[in-house]
Length: 93
Image (cartoon, rainbow, N blue to C red):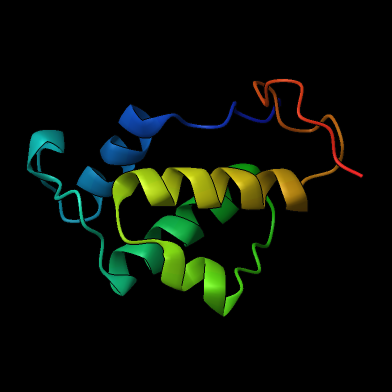
């Protein structure tokens, strides 16, 4: 089984829509802490990693776009090198 590619904004909106059983077009741009916590757990399950967001990272997430950026970066930092397809050739030191 291969690891799924990192989701884009549309996929994250779809994930958030599932959290409230609502249509994707009704997902608000601004996220609450409960939505971010749930979304983080979804990323952890999807990528089989444990994400350790710092307080600063968690507090920096206000919008869907913020969540996409922070969670994608956290998955890349937590996953073994080469384990996440579609990472765009990002290298880590």
